[in-house]
Length: 99
Image 1: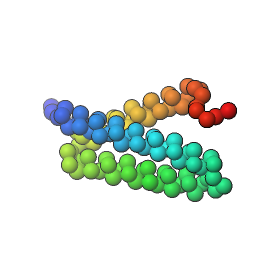
Image 2: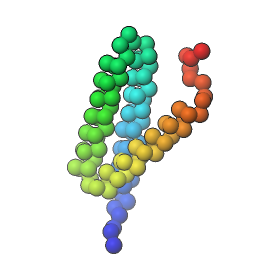
Image 3: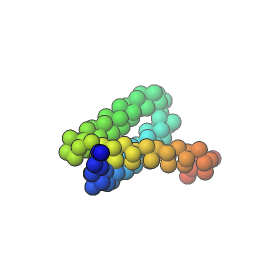
C-alpha cells in the first residue's frame, strides 16, 4: 500500500495556490496589455512564455525539494485555481473599467 505523506501534499497545495494565483493574475495583466497594444500577439506570446516558464520552474523546485507528493499537491492546487478562474470568467460578471 502506498503511504501518502500528507504534510508534503499540504506544502504542495500551499505553494501551488500561491503560484497559481500569480499565474492567473499574470494572465489577466497580459490580456489587458495585449488588448491595448498595436501588436497584441507579441505581448501574448511573451506573457505565455514567462508564465509557463515560472509555473514549470516552481513545480520542478517543489518536486526537487519535497518529492512527488508535494508535486501532486501543487498540481491539484493549479487545477483547482484553473477551475475557479474559468468559473469566474464564464459567470458574465461585469469587469471594472468595461463599458
